[in-house]
Image (cartoon, rainbow, N blue to C red; front, side):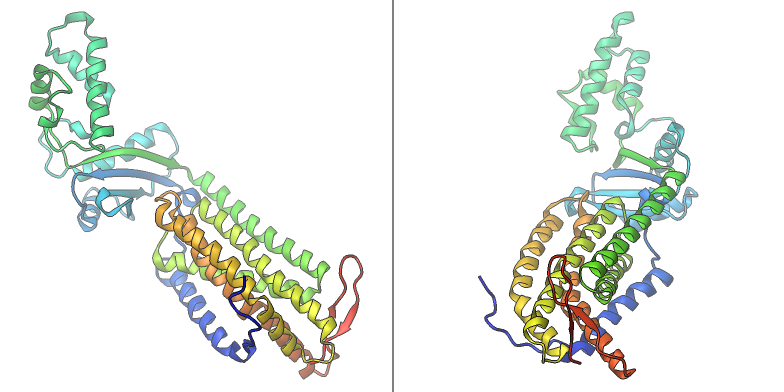
Length: 401
């Protein structure tokens, strides 16, 4: 199957348009990383506390941020989670402790900040654990069970919490919703001594600063090693200029992808780094296909200019490139749309990366070879030697400038 039969597009004549396109997006990303959002590192790399909050209505981000400021919690990041009607937000606190007390402290800070109209002396049923509710029922003993009440009240408390978290999504809107879950005497006691807020904290996560720093270092090293390995392989398999062109191309793809995260202020997590490493391999594979066709055509078109050889090679692989990239793009696009919040950063990086990686294999990688050849000609140096052999035998063919 082919999208194009014998295309004859002069890609190299449009190289200045390609350069302008790349410069616009690269510079925009760099400016965003330097002066706007910076490099939005996720909790995996900078450490902190993540608090997941579920509301009974659509939350107001500005009101939540104002409540955080009033409570003395500054530099807090607020992010919507899930579907639009899910009413869930993620509050990112720059808390640097790693112990169990830090988890409770971060959770309690958020709850206290958001409970702006809480009745004095009454706990919030939407943010009460089964253990705390059991302790309350044991103390009040609304069913008059006496000393043998622990097992019964523990079961009632667990049933209430399960109904709240599993059936009602973590937030009760009214005490009447508990009819049928708890006995009337228990419900009356709870209604008199508890209140219901419009939110519930259902999960807290924490990463310490030392772990985050170590992960940052490992992520940078993994990316650097992959680029170095690619340069060495292509320099050995082809020529060093092929390796340089591939590394420049992948650096271009990575820079634009990171810039997209900065411009959209999406956090960069470990899964995003995994996506970027995947992108490096994908973009490199597509680039090698074009390079290999250039090498083959140099044996058949020895008297042709290198620019003509490169154009012919790109056109010959164009149908394959569109088929492969198109199928991969549709797959990651479906992952981005339907994959959920956990895979959102990973799939977003792949969506951007595949588009840019496919574009750069055509518009950036191959033209670098021609630019290098032109540079050598301008300095009155002999044409670059381009390998034409295969396997272990490396023949040298002079490419005509």
